[in-house]
Image (cartoon, rainbow, N blue to C red; front, side, top):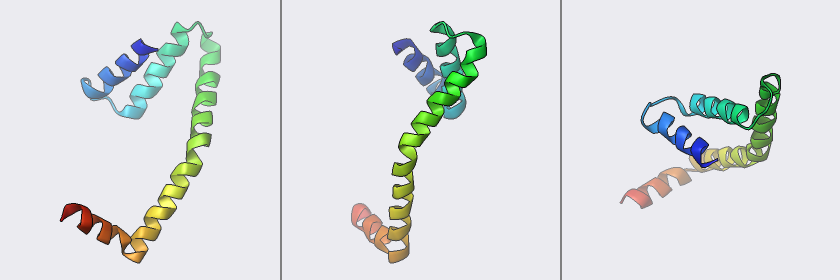
Length: 85
């Protein structure tokens, strides 16, 4: 697991590979290194991504709603002005 994280960071920071592509590549390599048969790798990756997306989607959705509400009411500008000056 530590090697996968190190490879992911290397690909993103040093190679400048897009984070999503690096994540998919490292996930693929990790699945193969874990002994998952090649035919089962796409299903395993799809299952993992969908589980993660399912648990994060609600949080992201609420964040978008609160952000939009702050923008419409002018709260975002007040917050930015307070933080900057």
